[in-house]
Image 1 (cartoon, rainbow, N blue to C red):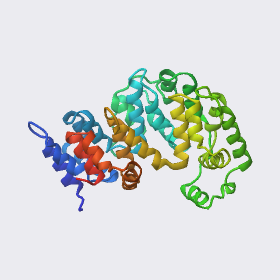
Image 2: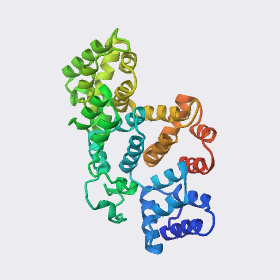
Image 3: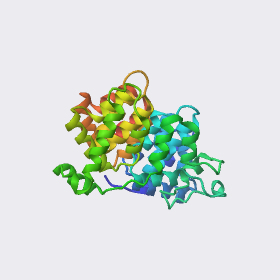
Image 4: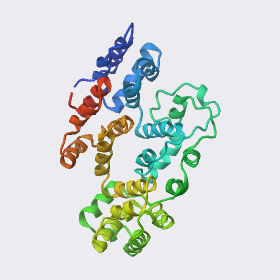
Length: 351
């Protein structure tokens, strides 16, 4: 498909001018472009009409459709930071939602998330957004007009979570865990030679410690010990620990933790483990849970579709069919509606 950022900018302008908005025209443009192209469209729009396209979309589009449309112009970390801001804004609602964001990130991603979340410039909210910096770290809170200059990810976690769940999240985001390249992870995962990159003796000790902290302790597991291990272990440590636990105890470490702890701590622990073991399977579960049963979790749908659209959304769609026995597109059609549904299906390549 030929791409012309100026033509796309004009299409969106024409869709928004006058009475009424031609939402379908906007969907055809932004739903069929990648992030880099959408950034060029935003630049072209500003150059032609002297308006930030995000502000235009904010005024013209509403609800979940509007939020998804704007999110498509942001980088992945910005999307996550924006979602966290929205979650924490609803006092007392933080729990599984923040686990699905924070506990699925690598150490470097957490560092970037902290920066994207932080408002550290006294005059920032009065400054124009730098359209030439799509990953501008101050965009998220500036865009929300946040006036609390002391706000940070840590402080919001301290304020909106409690107990052992809060303790785990704070340790998890502030611990310097070793990070490996995707190539290193794929190499040892395919060969099973965990000892090439991890201390197998320590892995075995940690697996034993988790077993001792959970076995026979329904709902009353040893949070201190499990938090210590899961907040410090690298992704490869966790992969090796998961395999060793299953081989020795003939049960999944996730199942053991699920029996020993209650939500939201249980969900936080298991998200950390499954991110290391099989992130795509975890994302499929999150997509399914977002649409299964009464109600729909549109924020989770929007987040995963936006972030994974240029990574592995096609693979997620196939895995969803394999594990759920129903197509992702069919569930989207039955659980969403209107322009929001149309944009999701366009991103998915089914419209």
